[in-house]
Length: 288
Image 1 (cartoon, rainbow, N blue to C red):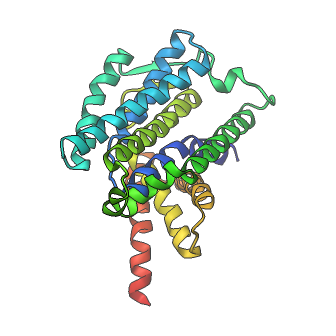
Image 2: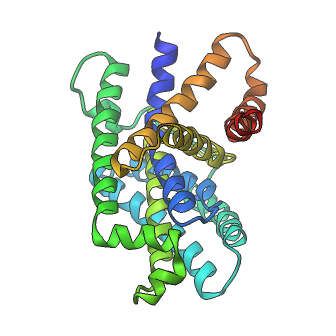
């Protein structure tokens, strides 16, 4: 049971990545690869600030700010320099590797002897259950904030930019600015996942973000499949399903390991699982 509880905790930590991918890919139709770098950036900033005994709220603000800058840079390169969004993300992600390594100063930083959000805030005595409660509150607040943002006039303009950029530009909305802000928000959310997972696992690692975009993408695809199947149009339900998608994704990986699949094959299993999710709607439509 603890094995699946750990997967649930990781799934909640990855909710930020799922929300970030949802904003960049499903709202703005931008394949943002900055995710790999901004996730690590969030973990690196968290780790180094914990070793300097900074307050938790200061670390949280710094992580959001750092992730936001990374996303904004991708947006600026894409909109102002007219570079393909995928290439812009790759450029920023590549640059962030050096930035992260410079900040961390080493390849791995253990944090077991430092106070994290999970060992300084104690609602109950059981460690895993306490972490679950903390993450539940954190992710719930995050979901409410994103849902509220997307329901405001600004959020509607963001969504309209992705749906019909020429139309919303004709109405006087600066679509370049919307994309920059949207990517900044998406990567700030991704950095928050790095902030959470670093404290949960007790270390920051320079390679922790490699391939992490597939986790967010898989989570969003799971949610999108359910959304299309149930024909859901509510923003709130969509966000809840995106969060649930992150948990389901981790549960599938946990089940894979639990039945005895070699851990070395986990990335392969992840890729196949995402491929099945992506291809299932097409296969179903072909049969019908």
